[in-house]
Image 1: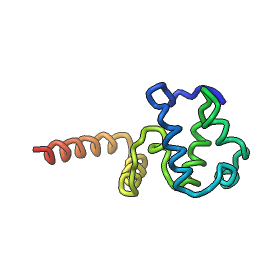
Image 2: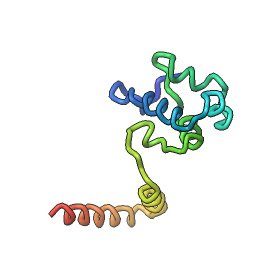
Image 3: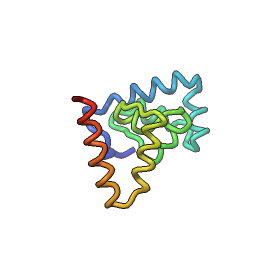
Image 4: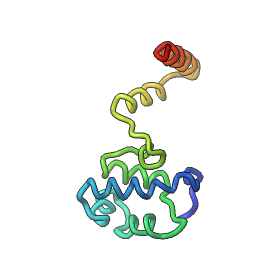
Length: 114
């Protein structure tokens, strides 16, 4: 396991969130790894080995099996289906339209706080 750019000292809580999702799933570490196509000892390595962090692609696999998102595991932001849809739609826009969409969303957010 190598140090990943997404993991800083302030984001060490990812381990707690990952453990919580594991408990909530009711699955063993080995079951989750198997379903994610990872080595059976992978979760133990990243959760117990000091300084070990998962690669983003492996974190995506784990998130899918644990019915959560990488955003939640890394940042603690629990994005529901609507937010996920918005991001997907935004990603499909041209650069010009992305700028227009951001302006519109900023304006709508500002007006909702008035």
